[in-house]
Image (tube, rainbow, N blue to C red; front, side, top):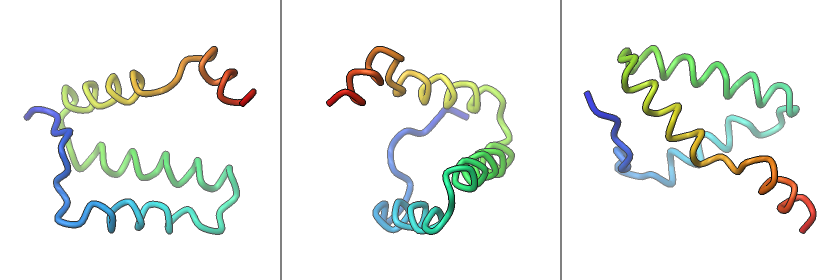
Length: 75
């Protein structure tokens, strides 16, 4: 199975909204815990270590490095 990076949702905005709403009212720590739990549940659902590794690599590439984060915080 290859990693799918195109939207598989009939209504992608609804999926985004569901994730945002799940975080509403949570502390930063609770939000981080929710994200971690959601990642583990979805990783288990995928059930393919190669796809999981590909997804991790893609997510890490999309993260700003430390210098970019500092620049964003200073703006």
